[in-house]
Amino acid sequence: MTDKKRSTLESIARQLGVSKMTVSNAYNRPDQLSPELRERVLGAARELGYPGPNPLASTLRRGRVGAVGMVFDEPVSFALSDPAAALIVRGLASVCETERAGLLLVPGVPGGEAGIDLVRTALVDGFIFYCDYEGDPRLKVLRDRGMPYVLVDAPAVADVSWVGIDDRGGAQMAAQHLLDLGHRSFGIVSFNLVPDDYEGPVTPERHKMGSFHVPVERLAGYRQALEAASIDWISVPIEERHPGPGGASAAGHSGGAALLDRAAQPTAILAMSDELALGVLRAAAQRGIDIPGDLSVVGFDDTPAAAAAEPPLTTISQPHELKGATAGRLLLDPPASGPQRVVLPTALVVRASSAPFRGERETTTE
Image 1 (cartoon, rainbow, N blue to C red):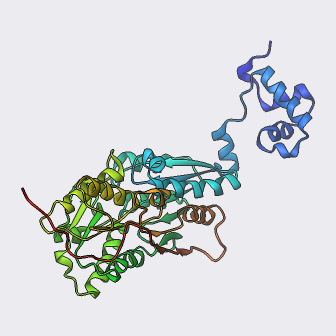
Image 2: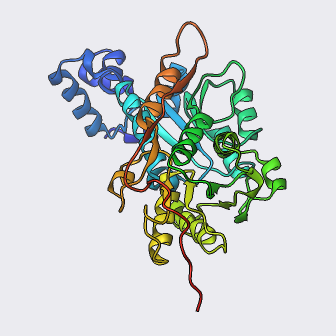
Image 3: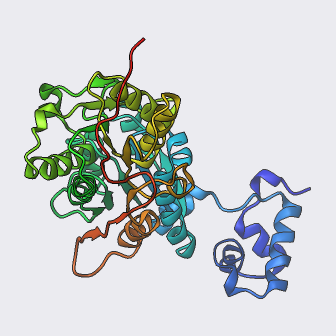
């Protein structure tokens, strides 16, 4: 009886009268063998109880793993449930499929030791860093490992490829659309500016502390447009929300409710994502506020849910799948010219959630 635990490429090759390379090719390069020969090799391996080459040993011999890691600021569930993040993952996955590479999702919270350890130990050939925290310590881990990586929607780092959009310009476009419609009373629903669980009005102090790139840039775009129209930025209420377990839509509902329950109700609300904006739409409907008759709402992202909303959501579009695919290509097939900075286009998509200002809404009290 053959000891199955001792079965090796050599013993299989000896039994079949072929070379060890032929047996190895049956697992690692099947296109090098005829289907009949490959099946003979795999059949003999099954008979001898050989499970196949050790993945870690194969990795060490080849010097590569055949997998890409994608690092997030949130749990893995975020990548699967957030519409924008899911589209970016899909774009990256399409490139991984073409390159026959696996995809490892690496969750974490900025500054969290668990997230740092995962980046330190993940068995991958390189990383897509879809994170947003200024000075994220996980970047140092990547540099220490000497691993290639590409930044997506993150603060730029010298000599590292970056893929994203002009967040400031997109936000300015959204605010300008509402200004052109005659609105002068605004509210904003923002993602967290600082890596904590704070929810509430954005104070000048928190604004100065802002360390998340995308929210800070989008606030700067809103501010640029509003101040150019002589609107006092300090007077614009901003509600900061963390998506948390309930998701961004629930966060938008909470932030929208806080804005709409103010004594001075805004006639226009800018939301930093479509999911936040969808929550604002729900908060308005619960209060009997007509959209767009009494309130205009503009989101950001143009995910599929924006067009399906009731009413359909005016938003800023960005090519999420292309963003993920571009990052994947830069990592797996880096250009000879060196690191690249790729700024993808945005565009205003006007739908039924925004309309010309029709005068201040009358409120009644019991």
